[in-house]
Each structure stands twice: as structure tokens, then as C-alpha cells.
Length: 337
Image 1 (cartoon, rainbow, N blue to C red):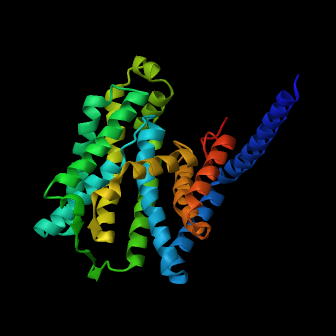
Image 2: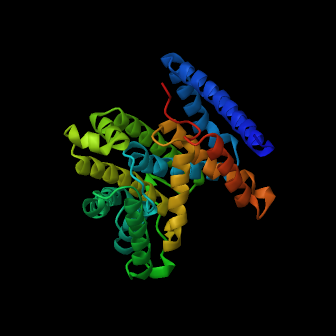
Image 3: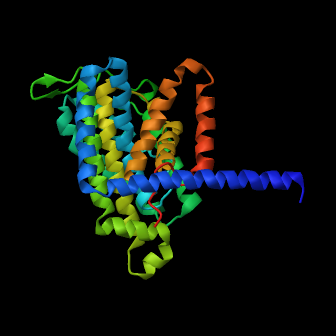
């Protein structure tokens, strides 16, 4: 055996040892969280700290955390499609573009209250989910990914060329709404709004995962042919995943429109879809706490590394590559029994 082969075996052994140590730590954490008293105590302390955070931090930190909660909502929406149902979508930004433009157009062009635009955003998201889902959900793997990528680009280009969407300039001057007489014109207002949305998205995702529909998604993800042989309508079940995931994205997009007061097609690029997918894969597809962790890392890491300068995204990419080598299943995957 050559020295090169020996070195490769040593390196492989070291990687395996590191993976076993990480898995051991994760298993201990899982065992700790199995205790309901400990789990709910952690939830209560965390929520209290998060609600108190804007009172003790700068506007910069509050802005970053607001962005984190926005990404948590959209990542949980994509996780329903990718993590629960096992479908690969590369055009998820199109769904929160639908929500953002629906609310923006209704507020700016027709003077309708933001709160009344939310049901319309949901309806448009359902229509968008049906538009992409009905003709394509019989496709699998790479073919489905290519179609969703094309759908995302179609939505962006349509927004760029239609007069009602403001073409390349987009929509500017979207009015911010009032909530119980308080105009949402401070970053803390949107921090709490997105935090509440993230909590609701987490609860809904958890309920869906443990429901009959969630089990059907899991069966399809593991073996679609076997699921179909068991009598599961695979096309309908996958369509539900696309529709529900699109609704998550559309609602987040509507709130993003009023937060920014301006939207443009450049806000909904393929890169944005990839970053959301990256957060889901990095945290652990199908695992809700993992997706939340992935969203947090993809938002916070580039911010805390701004001092590095123009190489920060390169270093971010290298770190992600190393993480994927040592944790290919994600940072917080489903527990291995």
C-alpha cells in the first residue's frame, strides 16, 4: 500500500471519528429535549429573551434579526416542499414575489388596506402553486428542478416588463399599515411582526409534519412508487406541498413589501432562491429546528464577517463546503434511530 493510500485512509478515519463525536453530542441534545419540562422551559426563556431583544440592542441588530425571522418563514415554507415532500424547487423566490407584488399593487394602485390584501395574496399564491404544480408534478428530480427554475425566472421577467408592476423600476412608495392605531414605521414593529410569523410558521409546520398529510409526504419522499402502491394519490399530495409552501412565501413577501416600502424584480432573483434552499439543506431538510438554525446562519454569518471585506462570501462558501463534508445530512437532521 502506497503512502498516499495510507494518508487517505487516515484522513477518512479522522473524518469518521469527528462525525461520530458530533452525532454523539446531537444525540445527547435530543435526549435532553425529550423531557417536556426542559423543552418547554427552553421555549419560554427563549421567547421571553427574543421579545425583550429590541429593548436592549441597537437598530442594526434588530434589523438583522428581523431579516432572520423573514428567512425563517420562507425557509419553513420551502422545507414543506423540499424537506417534507422531497421535491426539489429552484424558483421559490417567485412565490414571495407573488405576495409582495399583490399587496404592493393593491395598496399603491387601488388604495386598499394592507390587511385586506393578505387574503388576496394567499389566493394568488394558491393559483401560482396550482399553475406550477398541476402540469409539472408528475416530473421528478432534475426535471422538476428545471421547471421550477424556469417558473421563477418567468415571474421575475413578467414583473420586469409589465406596466402594473412598475417594470424594472418596481413599485415605490408603498404605504405602511396601522395596527390598532399604531403605524408600523419602526424596525421594532416589523421585528415583532416577523417574529410572530416565524412562531406561527413553526407551529403550523410541526402540526403538518405530524399529520396524516405529513406522513404521506414522508412516504413519498422515501419511496414514491411504494407510496403510490399503498394507495396514496402522489400527485395530489405533492400538489398540497407546493400550495402550502407557496402560501408561506406569499405572506412573507407581502410583509416584506410594506417593510421596504419599495420592491423591484431584482429582489426575487435565482440567487435568492438558492440562498433559501441553502439554508434548508444546511440546517437539515425535514427537521424544523434545523431549518431555523440554517436560516439564522445564512443571515448572520455574512453580517458578522463584514470586517473581512470582499472575501467574506468566499470564506462563507468555504465554511459551508467544510460543513457539508463533515455533516452532509445537515447541522440538525432527523434523529438516527
